[in-house]
Length: 207
Image (tube, rainbow, N blue to C red; front, side, top):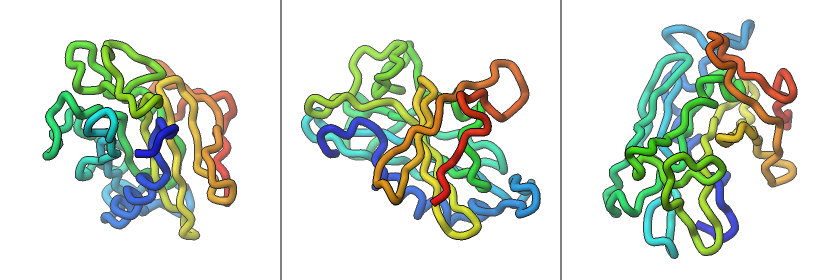
């Protein structure tokens, strides 16, 4: 883990994309409707965490689990083979979207925070309910975030990361940096999967 990088790094997401997008159904999308196909499209998800000593943290992901065409439930707790729970901080989740869509309302509402089980998530920084001791590397606090990876029909990949405060960012390959697309929030009790965003529809980079 490099000093000054407090959120999910693009290198980790590239590695995760290589693994998730090779799985059956991970890129299956109806070319006409641009919607997942029931029985064929599949979301896969992993838990992202950091582990180690405070002076030597490393980014890690769990083995992926499979869901269905529109959802996937990751592990909310992590058992690392090298470190005890006191040295494991859950950061968030990563999953694929078969049609390359931005985060859904359900995505934006799913965060590994539990005030009664502090080791379920201690990497949260932007919103810190029940987080007594967030992960810190050097002078950099590790921020809670989740991510989406996808691949368009032309083979270009989409890397998105989003935060509990609603910021949604996309990796710009040409600019070699994260670009904020807007701020989104779930639509409350609505059944709509589309969140409420500062710009609608959320404008994904095309590059």
